[in-house]
Structure formats: C-alpha cells, structure tokens
Length: 198
Image 1 (cartoon, rainbow, N blue to C red):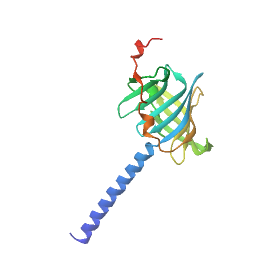
Image 2: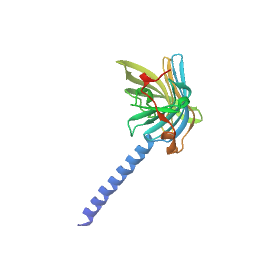
Image 3: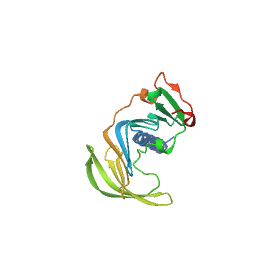
Image 4: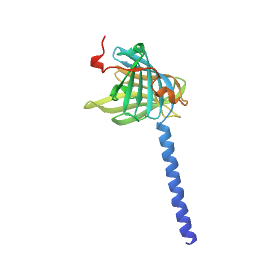
C-alpha cells in the first residue's frame, strides 16, 4: 500500500474514532447524575419530591405520600417501578406509568419549535430561557423553559398559561450511589392496589 492509501486509511480510522468519541459524549450528556428537590404544580395541586437520578433509573422521595407510596424507584432496565409503602414496610412492583417518568432532556416531547428569549441565572445556574411550542393532545401548547448552559438540563419549565410548572431546586450534579435505586431490605411484597385494605 502506498503513502496515499495509508493516509486514506488513517483518515477513515480517525473519522471513526471522532464519531465514536462524539457518541460517547452525547450519551453522557443525557445520562447526568443529579439530586434535587422537584416541585410540580398542576392547577392547585403541588407535589414536592427529593429526586436522585442516574442513567436509566431514578428515585422520588415525596414530602407527602402519593397514594400510600412515600418513595417510588423507577428502573427502566427492568421496565418497572417499585412503590415503597414505608408505614407498612411493604413494596409494590408496577409497570412504569407516565406519572413515573422523569423528563430531563433539553428537547420536550412533541416539540415543534424553540426560540431563545434570553439568558438568566436560575437556582444558581446560568441558563438560557426558551419559548417552546409542543404538540400536545391534538393541539399546540406553549411553554417557557430554562436550560442550564453547561449541562443542558431543563431546570424549570412553565406553561405559558401558568397552570402547570416543573422546577428543580437545590440541584446538584454528582454521582449517585447505586444503593439508592435498589429495594430497601426487610420490605414485604404488598397486595395489588385493588386488594390493599384501608
């Protein structure tokens, strides 16, 4: 093989390595480890939970139990959630529902357009404020979204009408212990929700 052939082979190899490195960086960007206080407001309802998240699993510890569950551990790798009924020392394994999802991508589900409004500091992080239009329930909805400049994390999202919001306060990007995403010991399996005695 001549010098030209070796150069082309080297360029192909270098291109492959760069593509591989970019894929790893992009994957790491969507797999941020963090902890925060998550506050979701919908109409008059306010749900506050401490969140720990890593890759394909996350944990919600609610300030006020949701149903009977004080903790929900979501495991995408198992395609299930554990509802932990702390007062009863029981757990229930259920399929992942929309309520168990944690959207931490800069792009919103059903996003149609995004327009930069400006820069702001929010909860200690430099952010970019966007007006986002999404397709939702057969129509268009408009949101304001604050995205951290470094991590590209949606630290706050508010519907333009003001009837829904999600905000992450006391947000810390740091590695999370794998034990947070396992069932605590000494819990008994609970009956299905319809059979739980009140």
